[in-house]
Image (tube, rainbow over all chains, first blue to last red; front, side):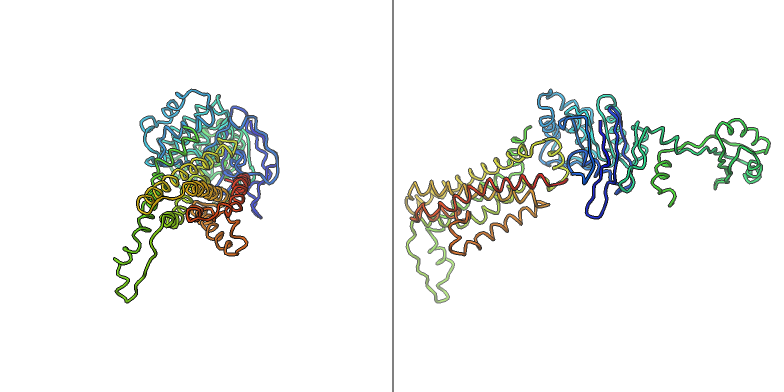
Length: 297
Length: 251
C-alpha cells in the first residue's frame, strides 16, 4: 500500500528522516514506534501530503480521497456539534455516501449521546474519538493515525484499539505510537524509528524472535547461590545470574536444552523451586535493544 | 454540513455578524446625529467656560456621511480584519488545518467560501449602516445626492473586498491568528502613509474608503478611477499570493 525509497527530510542542518525505506503491506496494521523526536510525525506528515520530503520517493496505492489522516490532538471549531464535524468530514470525503454513516461512526466511537453537543464542551478523549469518527466516516482505504490513543484513559484506549483492530481487512492502517503494548496488541507489522532512521521493519513475531536470547527465569524458596554454582557446571548453560529477589536468570544455549535438562538439574541441586519458565520477549525489550535506550539504562 | 454552511455557521454561532452589523449601524445612526448637534454637544461640554468660544458653520447633509465614514472606517476596518482573519487563517490551529487540507485536495475549495461569506457579510453590514446614515442624514440635515451615495457605497464595498484579499494573503504566510490581524492592520497603516506622497495618493486603494464622504460632498467620480483600477487588479493578485502561500506551507 505504501512504499518509500530513501525518503529524507531535513530542516536546516537537522535530519528528521534519514533514507527511510518504508513498506506498508496492503491490509496490514502497521505500528510505527519510536522515541520522541524519532521522526514519526514527520514521516506521517509527508505520507499525508502535508510536508514535502527533501529527497526520496513515495508510492501510495490509493487515491488521495481514499486516504484519511488523524493528527495526534484533533481540534475542531468549538461552536460545531460533534454530528456536524463528522457530517462535514463525510461531505468532504464521501459526498455520495449515505448520511446514515455519520450516526453509525458516532455510535461506533461511543459519541452517540454527545453528537448534538458543541465540541467546545468535549473532553480531550472525546475529541480524540470524534477525530477517529471523522477519519473513518469516509470509508478510507488507508488510515494514517498519529498517536491515536495517547490522550485517552484506559477505557477510551481500549475502545480505540478495538476500533483499529476492526479495520483489519477493510483498510490499511499506519499508526504511530510510543505505547508499545498498544502496538504489540493491535499491529501485525512494526517499524521502529530512531533518530530519523528505520531501525527495524517487518512482522511483529520476527522482531520478537530475532531479539530473543534463550533465558529461563527460576524462582526459588531456598538459597539461590549454591544452585547457581551447580548450574554453571552444566554444558548447556551459558551464564547464571542471581536476581535481586533470590531467583535465577539462566542463559542457555537453546531452549530445548533447558526444557530437557533444567528440571533434573534443579532437583540435583536440591533447589526448592516455586516456579520456572522461559523469558517472554516483549516489544519493549526489543525496542530498547534496537534504539539503544536499554543499553544506556 | 458543507464548507459554505460551515462559514455561515461560523458567522452566526460565533456572533461575529453582530460585531459587523453592529459597528456599521451604530456609527450609521451616530454619525448624522453628531454632525447635526456637534455645536450643541461641545457647548454642553462647556468649552466656553475657559474663555474660548467655538463657532461652527451650519451643518450640511454631507457632514452626516462624513461623520459616519470617519468613525465606521476605522473601527469597521478593525472588525472586518478580525472577522476575515478568523475565517481565513485556518492553519492558525494546525490540527484544524490538517483536518481540512487532508480532506480537500483543492485549496480553492477551502478558500472560496472563506473569502465570499465574510465579504458578503461585510458588504451587507456596510450597506445597512450606510442606509441608516443616509436616512438619518435626510431626516436631520437634508437630502444627499442619490448617485453619489450609490457610487460611494459601491466603492466602499470594493475597499472592503480589498481588505479581505489582504487578510487572505497575509493569513497564508503568517503563523498565527494574531500575526494575521497585526500584519493586515500594518498594511492599512502603511498605505495611507505611502499616500502622503501626493503623486501616489490617487492610486491608493485606501482612498476608496473615503469615497462616500468625498462624493456626497461634491467631489468628482473621476478622482477615483485610479484607486479603483488598482483595487481591481490587486484583489486577484492578493488571492493568487494566498494560493502561493498555501502551497508552500507545511503543517
